[in-house]
Image (tube, rainbow, N blue to C red):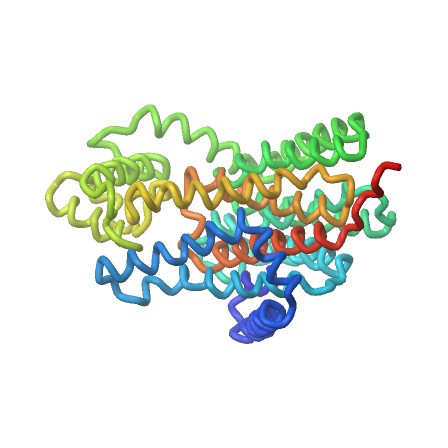
Length: 399
């Protein structure tokens, strides 16, 4: 499933449809599946609330229902999550997730070194999609890293996870996406520390952190300095941003954020409506209040500002609940001594962390690819963890 989100083939809807039917069947026929879905309410509840909120927002503002298309997929993933309550082959699950990172990383290598594309963007995006694609691969790479650190894993499988993780990470570097790469660093450290705490191998964890930093420096050097130049440009653009100087990736972000603040101040409770930031910004440009350099943007390059602008303060609170509820649920179980519970919880935790951090400087839900990955992983893994908690034998009563 993660791989299908990143390819343009129409047949990718077939596995999604199968899982949807399976999820509906599980929820209708299996009481344990329904209980697992309810036990995961910290994750499933905010997602359901977000779906209903944007449904009402679209109707209230009289917006074309085509704008509700991507957000409507949340309902499908809420039902697909029921399929995670089935008796799944966890070895296939974890190798499939890691393998997706490896395949997409190989695609990036081909684009960069064979096709000569400087900033790769995958096969389901234009160049404008490089940021989301980079985040997409880093999420899957983090899952592969966590699996490689798993205790009790056969050596051959550990090596496979390491290879897939490296392919995914290098592919993400080739996207030259600053936000996702910066977000990756603390999440990578958190994943390593969680697994070190669970295994008690603190020295091994420190070594992995050092190796990770070294590999990142080596990869940045191999890219002929492009990445270093992109990071160096941030400070210069921030320092020179003004009403008269708004050109450049960072300056344009700052201008969009200023525009977003204007929209929030003008519409604090109802927002301007789903996907309407672009129209609001262009109206302000026509009035001379905003620079024309941001005319081509339909989203403010911040998921938090997106929800606040389009849904008002209530929209922002729902987004915080969406991320916060999932972090609380997965974080609570990521240190469980049982691998069957801790590993999917760690995967869910790293996914939410990446999206929450990347959402500060980019929109992470406005396109189907990253939107689908988030809700598929977090909702599905939450139900999976809840089902595993229910099937775990109860500890013996003290005599």
